[in-house]
Length: 460
Ligand code: ADP
Image (cartoon, protein in one colour):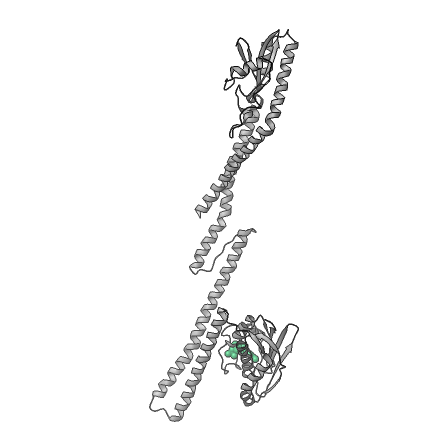
């Protein structure tokens, strides 16, 4: 994590340096293209006014006059034909000016050294304190010809400004670096916390408290992470509970089978008892077989990978066939079964949906009262169908309804304890209906009866 912090600081400072260089290059080009000619013109006009003044006032002392001019902020160089030269004001850093240039000006021409000062990438002509970087004008005083070269004394004119800008620049750079160093810490800290939390999560510790109170993307990421950790914890608990339920539900029939086979081995067991024990063992094996089949089905429903083999089929006909299979059980229990099952075509997985109807009908019979009734209906709605299984059975309390779709949940009441079951049937119903983008509704009244309504889209 340290490296991310250092990277961030280095990149930000790098960007600052790059932007400064780039900004300097652009403004330097702007000076050379736009400001330089303007500057040249301004100083030429000023130099010419000096020359005109000395020409018109032969009585003035030229040296004294030029000294005065230089003291208000100019660097001046004066030369005549004989090569006598004088400097006024601050010295030039570089005095190289060709003889031909001097002669050119002595012969009455104007020298535009500022305008023609060479453009260099990292040198701003404005500040170059060279004799070459001047304006030269011919000057006549008392009949004698001179060449006058001058440029503004930048140091004298802008010294305070220079200092001001230098301080401004220095403070901007120092403060920016300090702020980058601290703000990066502020940015990177939640990432370090998240990394720590990820590590503890991977070690199986779901108790992560991130306490990140931010409303930006990192805050959102932390909240999602927290939600993910809570969800993982719930799933882990569910997994543990699931395993312990399976173990219990497999272990208890196995120990029953073991107990009764021991009894069968016993020579003193009568043949009547033997028949009874074999029937119990068969019952336990049937229970184990149902349980494993249901577990396998749930596992493949959970995997969800192309399990649905959808086609168009008549759901009304399918349910009539199913009811025929249960007819004997229904009449054995004295239950009155009525139905209204019009031919209704839907797109879905016929085999899985048959499991749904099978479970709901089996429950309506199992949890019914003696001489109770069951009513099964198919209703066509706009884009869906609703299949209702209504029984006049033992019903359920509100708390039971909330849990019936949980895996292995069985209402543990005096009424249900004797009824065989695994507690997986309704979770299978739920998963299959969800895979068909449908919904299951439950209405139940204790001791009155229960209605399960499965709503399925016709073209799911
Ligand atoms: P199982 O029937 O194997 O116990 P299910 O998942 O099918 O498992 O049902 C879960 C629980 O829901 C049942 O144990 C029972 O308590 C309750 N239940 C399901 N259907 C009905 C019903 N028609 N009437 C009353 N209770 C029901």
